[in-house]
Length: 193
Image 1 (cartoon, rainbow, N blue to C red):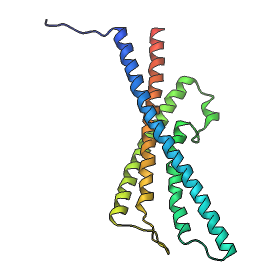
Image 2 (cartoon, rainbow, N blue to C red):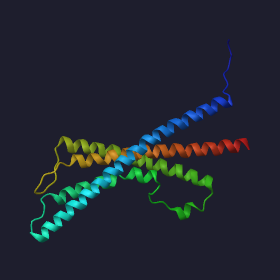
Image 3 (cartoon, rainbow, N blue to C red):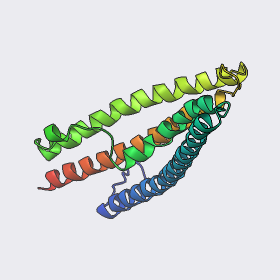
Image 4 (tube, rainbow, N blue to C red):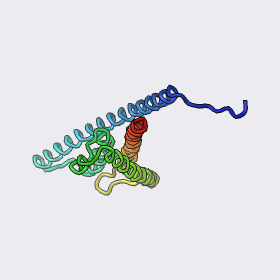
């Protein structure tokens, strides 16, 4: 059988698209679960911070004895508040965008701009994830601690940054693949027209 060629049928193409959609949906569910876990942790951190600050201020004004180390703990916990929530914001499309400008554009141009923006975001967030991972390892190996009355290790707070940004990178990849899928469907429908 020399010179035999294999051709794909529309059924084969539909099956591969169906499989790709299933894979994308599977990873989307995993990342969505991680985003919800991270946002829950962020909410818990917020509640703990509010409690500590309330106790600290109350003790400071009632008996003139603030809690030791609250300032440092609150300072480090702010990292968790921010970076555990960034991927969730991306998934719910709550980041800052220029909707007044974008809404005026043709939908096909909007999808190209969305892809372009996600590629830039993916590039930037990957660099941040890599560099913050390195900074976390340096802080861990040097046993860096806060300067103050209480010495709190810094590396756990620094480790939150690559974790949060890492989930954000995967969220951007999933959103980018969804945009590319929309673009391919539009292209296919235009070719069939």
